Length: 168
Image (tube, rainbow, N blue to C red; front, side):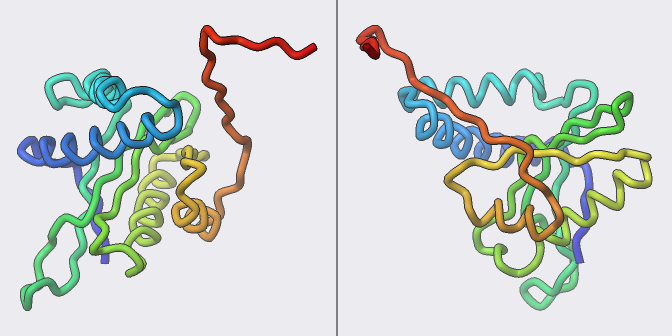
């Protein structure tokens, strides 16, 4: 069983360490930036939404806890994170980041977490749940499609250099 809860202040560093490294790798891979620039951009995005580790309006960072048996004890323990932006005027939620720790994947926890989020959003009269999935993450895409998400578009990017060639 899964429980979503706001992260505790002392957990923010754990999230920051995971997020900056993971997102920087995605930026570096997808946009061809240097590793250092990618890390700077990832940290800047996190700092913008969570100055001093505190979320700005409409941003929520949740811990994903499982209430399953762990090391012969039945107690909640964190298996992931969920960051989303809630826009109540538009009755929509956009998932900024969804993470299940690698050693807890393929156990149905991602589906349970998304179902828990959906139930919470429905109770808040939210009508739309959206997200972006990286092109090189077919596992996540398959999960979201199983959960009823539809592809609404495809993001494309082209790296431009000063060595421009013209098509004649």
